[in-house]
Amino acid sequence: MTEQIASPAETAPPTQVQKLAAEALGTMVLVFIGCGAAYMTGADIVATGFAFGIAIVMMAYAFGRISGGHFNPAVSVGAAIAGRLSWRDTALYSAAQVVGALVGGLVLAITLLASDIGFDFGEPMGSNGFGDHGGVELLGALLIEIVLTFIFLLVILSVTDERNDTVAFAPLVIGLALAAIHFVAIPATGTSVNPARSIGVAFESGGDAIVQLWVFIIAPLVGGAVAGLLYPLIFGRGTAPVPGSGFASGGATGTVPGFGAPDAFQQQWAEQQAPVVGGYDAPVAAPAEQPIIQDGWQWDPASQQWIPAQQQQQPPAPQAGQQGGWAPPSGEHTQVRPPDA
Image (cartoon, rainbow, N blue to C red; front, side, top):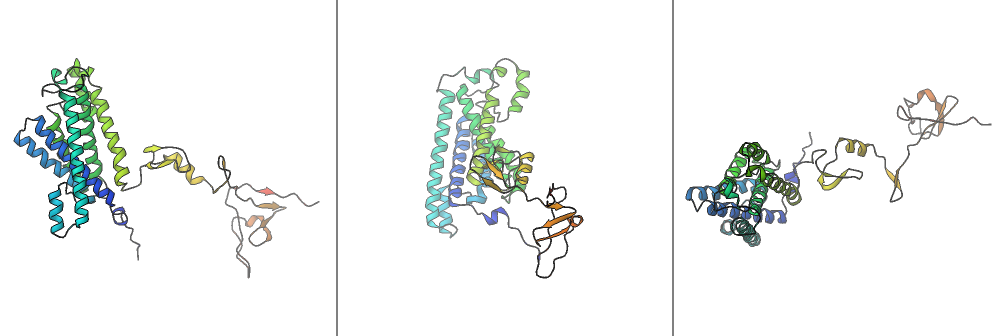
């Protein structure tokens, strides 16, 4: 019978901390996207409604496998009454949702303040065509692009996780996520969350578009890097890291646990390492035992007798009361025992 190998989702179900983190993050994104679109579009009914709906789709696909994707205390209470969630978990879920909503509202408030009436950091970006919502300061543009790129990458990493059984719908969810992000950022920065897209049109526009291009290169890279760091730390990995990825460093395996994978050379080196013995600062690999050969005969330590050296590649059959013969692997150096005086 063929042995069945359990998938990571079966062997490692989400922990309580991961469930609460998923509920908090999902509710935070819902508040930032939905309320952000409402403010940026002047409470346009269509844009705001789509933004809230798409935000729910994004987070449900991203975190549904982890916590069920409630993001609403009323949903958790209803699930408890229906017998689908314990009252203890309902209280914890609700607390996490409220915390996530408060964080989302705080991040949105800071971003809007920095965009409109906050720190005087450069000319308003609305004056050069990147936004037309009363002018957006450069600091506000940085925050908007960092936060939205973080959300975008969080969705991508979640829906493409091999532990997610809805991975087939990943392209649809990623497209909806990008649409919701545009609802929020078009009035403010024109929406980048993609350095290549911004580079592609900046040099054709010229002027201030080139001067402020660094914002749309640095901010998306920072947001994407933060998401790439936090997602595996909070929710773990569905598969082993790709060789050469993450933050690899020295050591026997060439990795910092949870932060990366060794490249091909590090893997080969780790596989060739013998058991380590010796001091703490300078470990020494235990040397392999070498055969002793004298006058065409080889000493067999297993049978405690001399055997013809030409048989070293094919050990003799074990004799009664004795263990099988021993031979070194091909290509090994041998130690020649000097003849007795």
